[in-house]
Length: 340
Image 1 (spheres, rainbow, N blue to C red):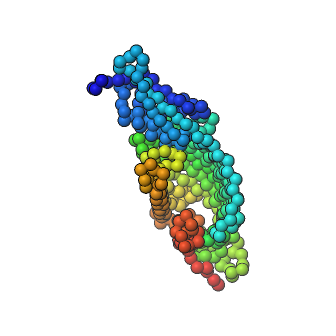
Image 2: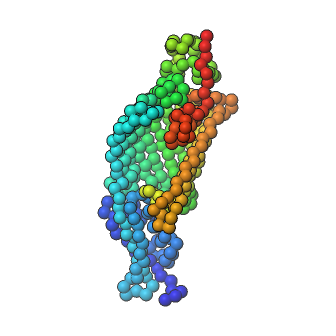
């Protein structure tokens, strides 16, 4: 009957054999016992799609038998496999032979929490990371995530400098939803860096001199004996936007983030950096079987109160996923070798 108002008796879910009912229910904007709102029912469908836990989500509003002003809202979902185990072997002109191992579960035991383990090894890097995220650490949707990692990096093989870097650290972050598609993120991290085998490049030596380290300048085949260690503490603040139509193989929408980070190094040096990352998906036909994707990433780093940005924190570009026609990390601040 036109103009009649209906209240929602129940919200039910069908097809969530793995995901717990509470994981789906926390994405709802339509409440039980409240007046039916088509926009909020649609928002619930969009939010379920955006989790990435389901291949498809359909909604249905059904009248309650024996009642003239009550309905049930039913969401029918088809779950996808949210876990993956990846083993990779490859070869690239920049990285040489590479090995990859990854174990990821985006919906751990149906709780909606994600856990991951990733390892990579190639000609210039060995990297291992273990991470976990609870997207609903509080009932208000505040997320909590954390990670620990180890990294061994040979900059000379990666064309980003002439030094070896070993680092390890841990970090944690909180996400605060501020609207349907926007959130703020606060993170705290600790990283220990140790650098060895540093060739006497101008940018490297200038930074070491600014830290009160004056290694000897040697010939090309010599060893300067220069070493440097630092304990870095990061505080980061970021903004995230997400209106993708779904979290798994999106077909339309935008996902963007802007983050700023302040680094305190050994209680002396303060450095700030900003990173912008944005991905846009545009469907090219009506049934969205063809999609155009655009990706933009930009960064800036600078010292505070006269501090110098470490050479190993510089931004570099180049490579097949960045600027084609250039080898990886060949576009960026570099300096010539010093000589006797």
